[in-house]
Structures are given as C-alpha cells and as structure tokens.
Image (cartoon, rainbow, N blue to C red; front, side, top):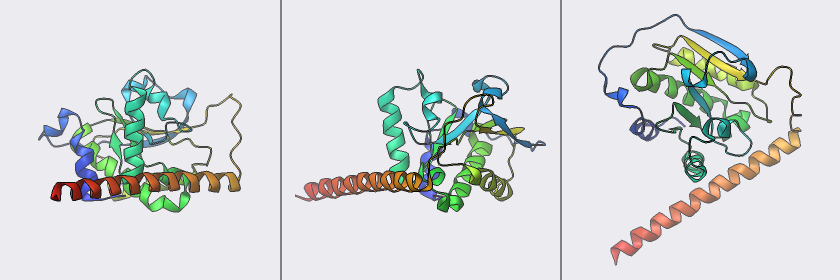
Length: 213
C-alpha cells in the first residue's frame, strides 16, 4: 500500500547513499524474464525484490546464512501486518507484502509497491540491476503487467536492467495449487496477518491506557 508513512519507514533503512545529492542519470533499460538457474552474474550484482513469506516464497533463498531466522520472521511479520514494503538492511534485498502476490485482486497495490521501489531506488539505492523474484505456487502472471504499469508511473532512473525470475529450466516444476487450495491459503494467511495486526493494536491501546494512570 502506497502511503507517505510507508515510504518514510522504507527510506529509514536504506544505504548511506540516500544522502547523495548527485543527480541520477537515465539509462536505456531492458526488462527480461529469466529462469532462476540462468540468471547472469552473482546475486550481489543485483538489488533483489521479492515478497514477505519465509515459508513458501523465494525469500529464504536470499536470507539463508545472511540474516538470522528470528530477524527474518520479525521483518516478514511487520511487512505483512503493516502492508508496507521494507528492506533487509544492509543487504540489497527488499520485500513487498505477501498478499499482493498471493491474491491477484491486489494487482493495483503490487503496481504501487513496485513504483515506490523504483522511486526509492532512484533516490537512494542506485541499483543498476534489479532482480524481481516473485515465484509462487499461486501463479505470478500478474507480476509483469504490474511491473510495466509501475515503469510507466515511475520511469526508472539509473537502472540498466530489470530481471524477472521465472521457474528454473530443466527442473521438474512443482505443481501449482488448485484454485480452491490457493483461495484457502490466501484467506488463512490474510486472516493470520489481520489477527496479528489486531493484537498489536490492542497492545498499543493497553499501553496507552496504562500511561494515563
């Protein structure tokens, strides 16, 4: 969800390059779809953008042996509860809320998150290569459409290439979930996030009441 508060929290965890006043140059950019086992160069060449799911999504592949498990869970929970993207500082790794990938009805929110990321990259990250890995058993056909819309909304500055990761070639693909399974998983995940958000809100109100006594 694109809000001023979300952007301020996003920028609070960026690299020190955010202090640079140098104007960004606009380069010729290409968007390519690439199987995960054919991505060129080391992952360190990219700023990776994925979604907040430490169980079924690709996020663990990028945090393994780099970010403590409990820290990953904390950030994943915060992203999904607040509906705000965040960065795993100091890694060049960011994540959007899980629901915008798991539920295609949130296509417009995914577009807004991608546009926000491109805007922040221009002001702070300065990444020339971006790797978007939104692989999901729920299907990701809407990701390319949302990305094209985001590029129209916020033409990337300083970006040479955006690589959208697809399933590995030559590897037996895991069967996609049925419509019923997808819907059940999405409803359960959203309900869990909503319950956690409500609990956090109740705790804040309780602490505020305690301070008044």
